[in-house]
Length: 302
Image: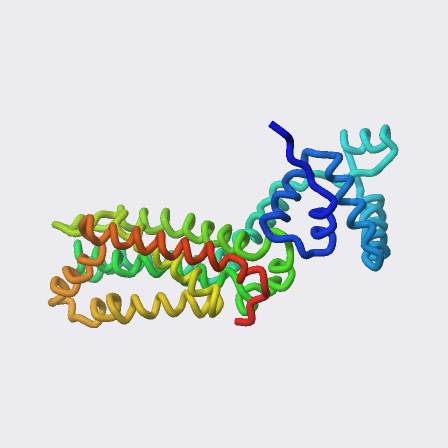
């Protein structure tokens, strides 16, 4: 099988910043292990004329900072032997900070605290509010929209103060948005699972995982709608529709008459037909998101 390498045309488009997002990802991954292509891309970047003095200035500043950085232990010995300074390997705190930044503003703001409060509130209503087993269906109708709040504040000019920088990098756009969405789901699922396990058992109704497909479909729908109107507006629109249709009718009922609205809400989750419909909706939203993926390459204005 013939090995793939970066051609001069692709290297030139990458240096000019006009390469497609997928092509840029492939190039950056490939040059990590191919010195020949790395040299070709570097030559293309250096040959950009007006960009060359800027790159030389950045390179000089980096080397000056590296020379001034204190290096100790074995790294210091290797630097002395090889005749060049080295920056120390980032410690656990630095790596944790970078991971937290990649996860997005949702995990650094108030959304995570609100998620924990909802989980604790459901447990408090079950044991201290006299709801008992009815707390599980109540949590179930709220669970699918909880990730939407995190997605809405994870990406966009109004949510991320570094959005302009992140959106213009090869790793920005839909790729960064999906990473942050996955981080939101990775926090939501365990928190709600623990809350569900702590609630009193109910006589009947959907199980603990019944909200996963609806939550996934709503999240993908919010992302697809966000490709037109922005993530914040898309997430709030989907959450608003669900609240009007299901959540508000459930919570506006008196505690003595919860059985009827909770039974109606269970129809959105229980049974193969309901879950199949949510799965089909998730596939359709994912397809639309794939078709609209280029829209996230531009800066959001909302």
